[in-house]
Image (cartoon, rainbow, N blue to C red; front, side):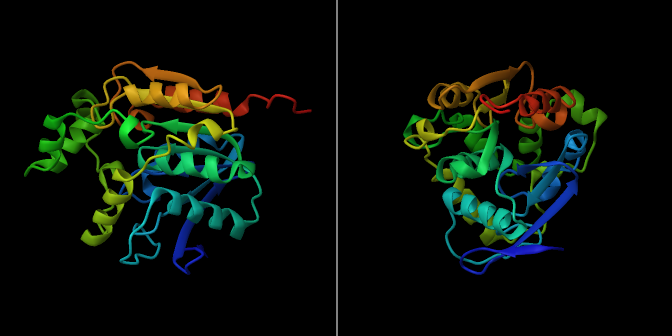
Length: 261
């Protein structure tokens, strides 16, 4: 599998498909690029898609050292540099949305348009999941509970899986812990007003894993951001609510930039 190198030398595996303007797709916590397998082809009519296995997942390196969402963002830019991509659209969901916030905030010249899905600004301003949800995720049936938080029962009955959104099964336990700590430590609140890329915020209204109130916070904090809530959708809205969610994203990305010729 092709790979780039992070600034510290860590191997960063990436995957390119399609042709056209590049769209970077960033997956959730402890998941590799297969998170996007059922979605990415929705965008191949007008653009190419670029995914990367964040360090600790998939075919990327797995150093046993602390990581962070700003560090993940720098890894994404290292992949863009390796490929010679000066500017791309960026779509991040869940922890990938936290990473996408930092890509846009730290590297504004590299992001044409930004889409943030089922994510949070983090820090003390964020709306945390309930104590009941935290207890359930820490319990003996955590994997089944996670599946229920990602998808509605009716959808899961019709789509029995396996679901790549439930985690990279080959990921070492220490790497899972590092991802969890990085996600929990995320706090982009002070950086959000500096994001200059046109931004769309998407969220499932029935998301209890990451409460939908965080979408409102992001949309209010990022200048000019738009907000779209999907009724009845849970955390994996982008998968269960295809093709609507993909259509919303594609339409937003296809809009001409203000002042563009």
